[in-house]
Image (cartoon, rainbow, N blue to C red; front, top):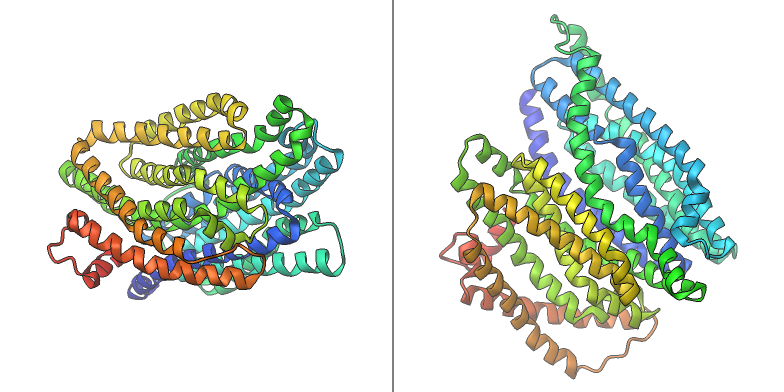
Length: 551
């Protein structure tokens, strides 16, 4: 293979990959409001339940194998050992297929008891039946999506990041298009029950994966043929046997999947126990209201939470390779500086977003979902903002811990935080209802952050006093930026009426206020010396600040 061409593909692919992830997230955000209107917000609780288990099942059926495939393909192709590269592909794909089929069969067998547990044993038979059908539909995706991930991992390891990213975009596009088209056809044109919108939304995951699989296989044929030809020309024997490759794959994959699983264990508690526990505590009559609140919180609000998480994780994870490099050089002073820079940068971007969410929760929820259950939805969203903040910061800490080889500490922190989540969940839900899920999740993420921070401080002596000072100034700058916006928004009369015209008007108002808020935040933060310190710049002009943020 032409190494210069591979280098160019890597550079261009990295840029394309970042853009591809953004486009995929954006597409995933846009379909949600129409789906909610077609299915009804109460039925969105089913959607959130299914996709919480879907994430868990994918982790089990993939077991970190795609991550291991990409790493090992890159490792052995850099050594020009193409015979081993082919063995990695065959062994890794075989493991994924075997695991995914096994997990799908288990899901089919436990679909009925799992549905009863998730909804509560006092739930209507019709609801239990509907959820069981959804799990049966999901079983198809549990087989197809891991296979797609294995194929993607192979091309990723070959440095075809452009194909990797475009495959993600295509998968999401086909999925979203299928959801909107089929849901409209079944519910509006054919007058099927609203629950059918959820059925097709779950089936669309398989449709998107099939399209992306065919696309990836088709466009990677040339790369696969090249590797096969180079393997034939290779005079030396493969460095590793299938047994050695299996051991390497498991060594790389198992820690990855353990931390990924523990990171999603908190939301799994909400999905598994909320409806059942609420019915036991308050009686079966509370079931419908609890299902509505659960659907809003775990579906609608969770989608909005993706907005800050994409940006914050993008900036935070971009510095992780530098941490790994500094660790190899045993440069603890530089590691400390980089950790502070990551956390400061994320806080600088994330805190003003959270401030906007809190002060304009009703506007944002209305723009996203219209005025259906607007009061309940906006209140749940506003209260969730602290959880959104902590839930965005915690995975960044987790990535830092993984990069610095503090995996044992990371796993211990996740286990302790899960115990805190589980123990606090039931009394919180008993006292506060749906809001109890938010409070217990906040404790779950906060305990992770505190334990991560303790470990990092112990190992790399982070300056807590200086970091806290900058954090306080960022919070003050974020509060100051909301003052003129609140004043202007209070003057402009506005009614949250149904229809696209009202939502467009609110978008224009929020857009204008957003510009005002950004200007105030810029001058306030510069006055406190925050961006100068974070980005190590004396001249903090808008142009240079934007340039540094892009880097």
